Image (cartoon, rainbow, N blue to C red; front, side, top):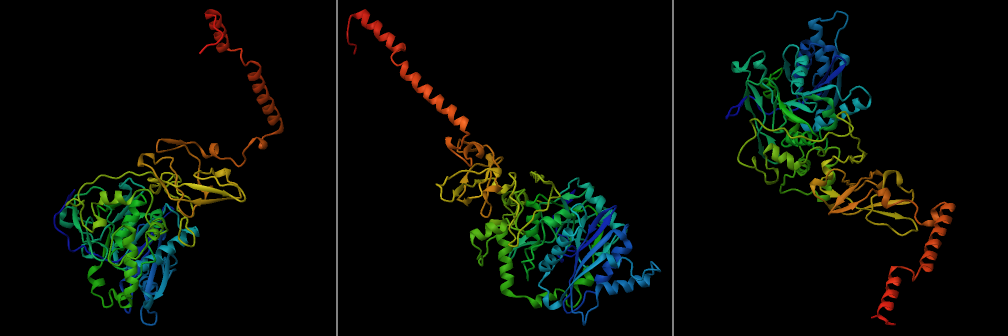
Length: 538
């Protein structure tokens, strides 16, 4: 492997789009956005045509297209694709092969609010497909632009390349090469674009690429992700959906999602071969390219930037989110993951987010880097967390979560018409229906005490907490069941136990009274009196 010291300017920033496909009962979903505003993207139907005619298993492909256009003026992507397929006459009995595999999500051009918002709509479509059983976490997802071309049998090749990473959490991503290089072994050494650098603008923007040469398998990156191409198992797309609450935004969406991927346990890899290519020339020279900016709302754009920056601790002059809001946001549906921490991301990526510096030590992380381990969720890789209507998590996080690495919540249990018992953890199956859990400020503990330390956090009640042996400040807190029961006192014991307990207490007292003065001390006193002839000892 070698990362050249210069930038490959031919590989540059592009938008994100997506599409999907299935192989051997494994779907490969690849949602993509037909970025249209005022003028339809004529390359969208070409992309569909290239995809279905060059795939090894075209019948397994499912495509989700977000089409932003004016239907009274612009050509429909699917209709034009059908015309192209009819001209090709692949199937005499089917005027539009694979049309049933294409899902069009249409919005009017005037409602186009930028690539992040559009991707957020597609993410919602994928989530709905999962809820309906049309998509499973072990399917494959390919996100890309709407003006692409492909190498023959690209679908099977992408899956084979992903398998070379030997990482269930791998995400292949880069700014792909130009369609002019289709079928070309660049420079005779399989040169590929490699993302590893950023610049600070209103947020954090992925900055062009370097070049990687002679790779024999996907190359681990420093968590820099590009929206132009992203390939992974679909559990990555389902766990880390694009934030739909970021309209009118361009800079910041890519690294923000990269941070979310990485903290969820995913690793970004540079593909070592180019199987999907981008038509930069025709797409970027088209009139109306980036036309969504004519709909741009400055206030909304600023709010989106603040939202993205707050998630990764990038400070700006316009920050207006309160500390509690940010903490809640970081654990929400569009927040960070809990498998790795933001501090770990800063060390791994080498990017000083909190001080807006591209490097924490003056060096980049474009070369060989060390993978950062994490603890997988106990429910496994296919577990997709659920969130409520306010986008707060429904499930209580497990004890391996990084959120509980530094704090232990104190729970006060209040019973109606009874004295309160404070600073006690309540076992899951011991909760009294009359109890109300009140969350207090956390008690600080060391990171070495991570395992077994529980942290409820606001919004979680006591019945969500499991009993464990905990060590805090050199004091042992035994299991909650031993500390607190629903009933206390001898009156709550069975009658026969109360009776025998009473007899035992009476017997002990009687024994003490009867034997008083007959012990070793009394005998010693008598001996001393007899020996010295004294009637009184001092």
